[in-house]
Image 1: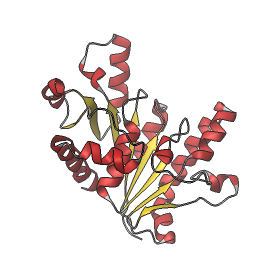
Image 2 (image 1 turned 135 degrees about the vertical axis):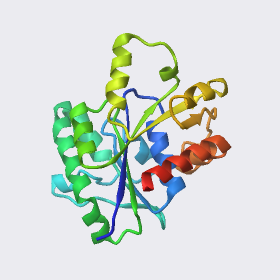
Image 3 (image 1 turned 180 degrees about the vertical axis):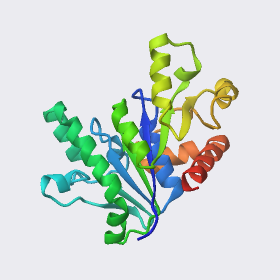
Image 4 (image 1 turned 90 degrees about the vertical axis):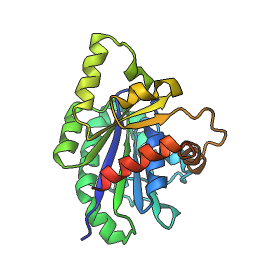
Length: 232
């Protein structure tokens, strides 16, 4: 059974570009399976225009997951059915968390069984995961990527600062996203993984989003350095 590197992308706040980063990592890396485990939106599934088919929670509903092939080296497990469950009853979150943990442990077998040509799994998640789940993911040895935005560079309340400290304590790497040009140096004092704001992206499609972000040389360097750390 081959060795699989698994990275979980998470955030405290919505709208920080967490799903965008998960998308870019998948496109830039290749040989990757991306799991859309954001049970609030399934935005990543929409970005890749994945058909509305059963996704990663299907096995827990006595179904088979649909594995979407983007290209020969990039695959998506959609999250539409997880969103449907969450919208019907938000108390299902704990069950979804347990299902995600079971998937994490099963991933090497799944990749081997399906003969996927991948060596990396990227998992997009819903904002503000419970810290108990983050701790469990950390104990399983996953590479955890916390995504924040320019708000991390400004003065925040003591409560918010404590939340940032708590969430980033589970991170293998910290990414500050959507940074303006004048803020790059300040952001790089905190982390080497800084992504500059690229303005309006006309097409709501994974390839267009990834291309716009990676077109910026500094963004491309940050993504490449982050992927190197994930693979190491």
